[in-house]
Amino acid sequence: MIGRTEIPGEQEVRIPMDKGVHGGTLALAPASAGIVLFAHGSGSSRFSARNRFVAEALRGNGVATLLFDLLTETEDRIYENRFDIDLLTRRLLQATQWARREPRLTGLAVGYFGASTGAAAALKAAAALGEEIAAVVSRGGRPDLAAAELGRVRAPTLLIVGGDDDLVIQLNRSAYEQLACAKELAIVPGAGHLFEEPGTLEEVARLASGWFRRYLVERRVTA
Image (cartoon, rainbow, N blue to C red; front, side, top):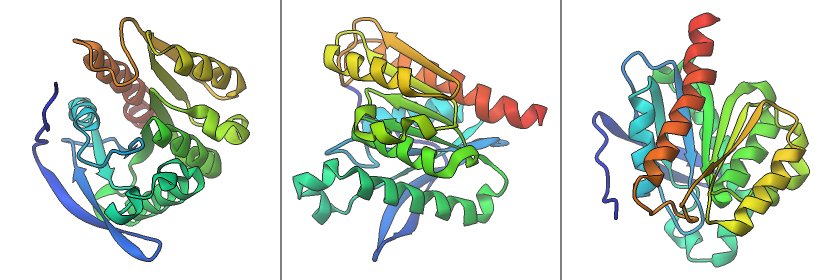
């Protein structure tokens, strides 16, 4: 089991959302060329060991990361909130606005990394913001929960699914057909929904790093 990963140089931040303030963890990479906002899945938080593992890999590829809580502790106790994609999307958009105003992040390309229900929120937010979002990666995502918006997504999108996660594979294959942007579907052999099997989360980190390096880092270098 992966324990909590300590991210060097991380800073705790406070992000206004709706009527409250949500905690977040911002970590800059040396000469950051972009920033990826993480939208966690149902029942998770910004302390998700899996997302923190991926975040550390992204930083090693020149990408800053922002992990934050989509729901307050009180909101998360209400099960329905975890699947309220409109609510999660609104919170992600508010976090994106905060990042756009943050002086340390000025000029950085913005990407989204979403897991499970967070992937649906990431895709809906990307559809709303159009070309403002440079890339999206979904890990074990539920893109079916954003089905009505998939055709409007303009950001290059990578869908990562575990090879043993049969139902989610079907949902992602259907979503892949609906996406009209640059896209890729990557199936990780031997992985279940949570990518707990040895080496599978490392493969997620490798795939995500390559995607964001291509569309955030290299795009900025050649722009």
